[in-house]
Amino acid sequence: MNPIAFTSPLESLTDGVLVRLVDDRRPEALEVLYARYSPSLLALGKRILGSLSDAEEVLQEIFLYIWNHPRRYDSARSSVATWLMLLARSRAIDRLRTRKVVERTHEGSALANPAPHTSSDSLDTVFLEQRRDRVQRELDRLPPEQRQVLEMAFYQGLSQSEIAAKAELPLGTVKTRTLLAMKKLRNALRDEIRQLL
Image (cartoon, rainbow, N blue to C red):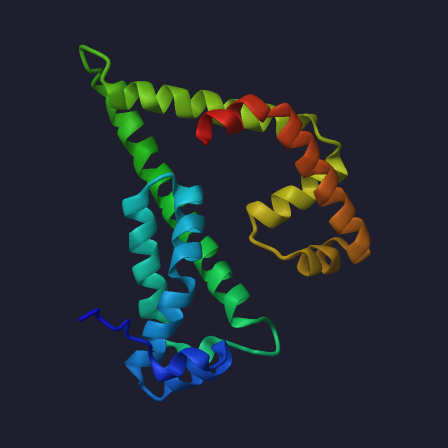
């Protein structure tokens, strides 16, 4: 006998309805959301963090947060998919910042007590620093108005609409500047991007 694939009767429901069912403490609704979105959320976390294990931890944090705070979702502000992606991005960036603080602490300790030889970890750190410096140099070469929108998006986590409001610019201008900046960075960093793939 061939095994029959299990399908939940909730799979046909919209994301918004599933979030309401999570609020009613229905774990099967959370399972359906997890099945729907975990692959893309995991991929986003891995892209930001460069580590599958860290990305998996972020994914667990997100779904635990949804289970504990389903009412934080506001359908007037975004779709469930956008809300989840923003949660993933925010959590991953927080983890990345924490990691950088820990790395700086370790680097300070290493400077105070230098090791007698170079480990593969320290070589990885050197390569990472070189790549980071290269990206920063290319960011610095962008026109100030293009660099501004990228920094507001990536470092402050603002949406294009939020950038437009905060910078007092038309939304179309923000979109154009973002697109131009990303094209310039993609062209300038083509070799680095190829190495990451």
